Amino acid sequence: MRIVIALAGIGAILSALPAVAQDFTLTSRSIAEGAQLSNDQVFKGFGCEGGNTSPQLAWVNPPEGTKSFAVTAYDPDAPTGSGWWHWNVVDIPASVSELPSGVSGSMDNGATELANDFGVKGFGGACPPAGEVHRYIFTVHALGVETLDLPAHASNALAGYMINANLIGTAHITAIYTR
Image (cartoon, rainbow, N blue to C red):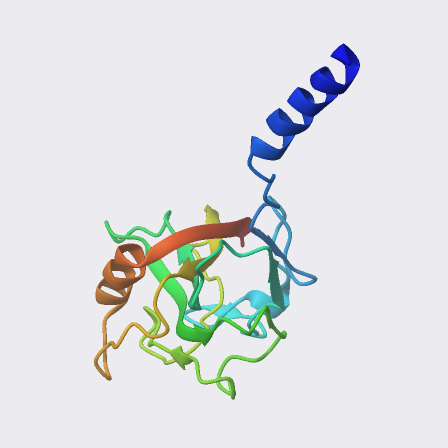
């Protein structure tokens, strides 16, 4: 009888524990954590001669309540005082879990690409000053709203504000580049 009661007690304790959630994770076949970006992800212009191709990104296990995603690529080391936005994609539907390599400029999933800090809508690759090592933080943001309702020519600062105001989780990969 004591064994049955003890087993019932253990069962009650285990059923009361929260389920262990899988981590929200970003992966890529194009870029890797801490690794040098390939020439494909380097800007073409400003003295750089790269492919200017957006990387493949895929994510799994978004937080419960995710209604859309945003993807950003940011260089905090740019000598501007405010970093450099290389890519800002908003209003990615919650049903999307991957952006293929080279998709920038031809998204057909309802997402919106903003102008990067090069002044061009879409992805703008790495192009740090010669001799400097810069970090490139690729982040997928899980959002609690279906759309950010940004104005047509929203700045990256406004998009960042709205992303952070509606954020429920992030996953990222930080790559580097030097020339």
